[in-house]
Structures are given as structure tokens and as C-alpha cells.
Image (tube, rainbow, N blue to C red; front, top):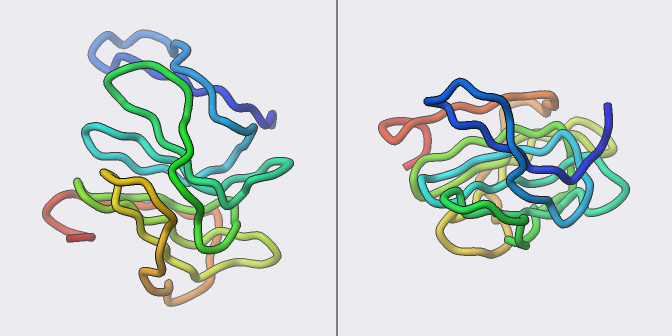
Amino acid sequence: MAIVNKIEFIEISSGGGGADFGDLASIRANVGACSNTTRGVCGGGRGPSGVNIIEHITIASTGNGTNFGDLTVARKYLAGCNNLQRGIFAGGTDSGFSNIVDFITIASTGDAADFGDLTVARAYVSGLSNSHGGLS
């Protein structure tokens, strides 16, 4: 699998193929991601450097990723999920599986903060939430 810095988007209503959105600041794969209606955010990942980096894009306009902050601990293969205010990044691996859960406030940039721990250290995970459950 290639490690790249490309961001693509699709028009869900059109059923078309992907189109270029912009580039991340560093080449990465296996990031965790979350969003609200305005901003998309990705954190961590596998790459030559910067596995604790968090970047964001403005969904309404194409463009490159911009620095958001850092995860509390560098890791890859982590899950992301969100509600309209907060995003979380959970689990992952660096030197071993992780039980760390970080949170960010999506509307404002800054480093992630400790949200708690998973019951078991995990990697290769997925996340899911809505505005009526999960994070509040």
C-alpha cells in the first residue's frame, strides 16, 4: 500500500468518481478521521514522520491540510469518531496496541487532550457516533 499525501472527495449525490481536494502536509496512511459540518480532521497515521500530527481541511472548499495540533501519543491504525463539537481518536498502535482515547474540539485548533482509556488496548479499529449518542 502506498503512503501518500493526497486528499480526494466525491459528490455523494452524483455517484461519480473521486476528484482531487488537496494535499496533507506530510505523507501518511492509516489515519483516524472525524468531522463536523464545516471541518474535516485526520490524526496520526503511518509514514516516515509525523504520526502524532493532526490536520484539518474546510469541507466547503478544496485546499490543502492545515496543522491542527498533535495527538497525546503518536500512533497509527486508530479510530476516529465525532459529534458536532468533539472528535475522538481511540486505540491504535506504535510500539504495541494502545488503549488511549484523545479528544479535540473540532471548531478550534489545538493539541488533543486525554479523554480516557479503552477497556482493552486495540488497533485496526473503527468508530461510529451520532449527535444523539456517543460523545456529548
